[in-house]
Length: 387
Image (cartoon, rainbow, N blue to C red; front, side):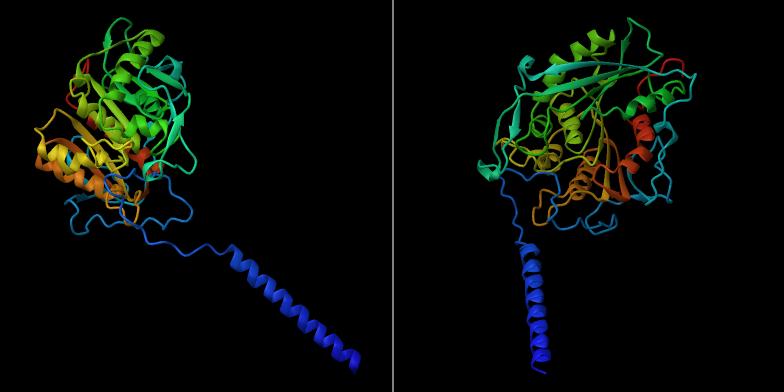
């Protein structure tokens, strides 16, 4: 009996130790309670667009919520008519448009030429990189760092050497237009146009080279493209690019989208056509510029409402689960794009705004569904030879 009692006591002690160890392990792996978010002041550097694992999930926004613009809701699977302007809501199913696929073998395809750019050759962007942890104002700091980027130039098969061509600049090296134009140009839905796809200088968010290029409210990036990129594109691809702003477009997603509008806003004598998906019209600029303390949020806050209309034709898209930072009023992508639609309406701009259900930030299925008709809409009004 004594031996049996000792066995029972030993088992009970072992069981207790195991349970205690498991509880301690669980406690060690439990994340700390979330802190109460605070609003970023205008003098503080904005937060990054990247979503961390500890951040609250993005809420699904209702396009019919109070304060949102009135919009035409389309049946699921449909996209807005090509020639229509204004506000639209598309359904949750996002099937890629057939023009996103390469044309069949034997049909005309554009040629793609590439060249490389180095930061050591640039007088605009010698290169920066964000410091880990960031010890500067607002928790952001950076240090000098070189960059190397590839630029791809799409030249359609229908381009006649020696002639002057309209063109579109895309950010982040985005080449999705290449296949689309192989379809649309022969159908005479868009002009015979060149595309210059420029990779960013690296990183993301405040303190990075990409953030510096795309989120800065100035004409600097446009100057960089005009004086350093376009001459190399013409030389490499043996093309002549138009200087007519009506024959020039800028396109981008996220901060690349705000960059596209920044290029046109600060240099409307260069660009009249802008195409954006999940445009970062929020307070993302760093370093903070006292003249534009709220970064691209200032577009719908003061710049567009308080300025005479500019000759800009603008396409915008946002998703119901686009980026959102709780507690930071100037980091809500849906609200920013909704505000843009409102002020563009008030000022009489030619624009098209699409609110996509079941779509996150720079949502690939949604972009693949909308891209061809968006591109066709942006280029409306430009003459097409033979049409």
